[in-house]
Length: 120
Image (tube, rainbow, N blue to C red; front, side, top):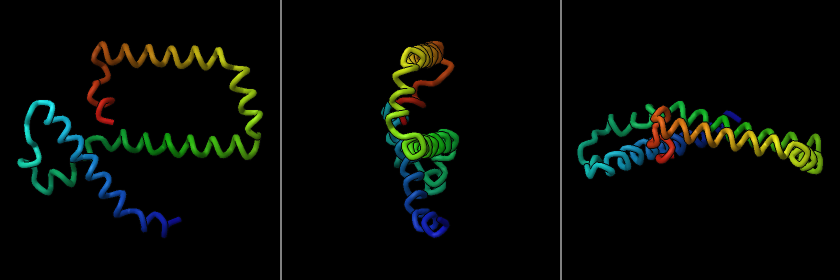
């Protein structure tokens, strides 16, 4: 596990730097500013740190979903999972409808910035 992590660490670091530069380019490009010509190496290397919490939460969410899918399929079987989804379908529909309404209201009332969603 540690060898695999160390093997992919340079790619992950490069990807994080790319995400930071992409975010800055998209943000300042909206205002018509060519930000790349004003950035120094130190700015480029730490550009992703402001969004580190979003990246960490996204990674944990993906890991959780992969683990949960494997546990459900291996231990309970796919038929049982489908049965649970069908049994609680109304609850899931209500939950996702309320979640969508909450997120839209957070965006409309400027509690959740739209640029955070549009960049990722």
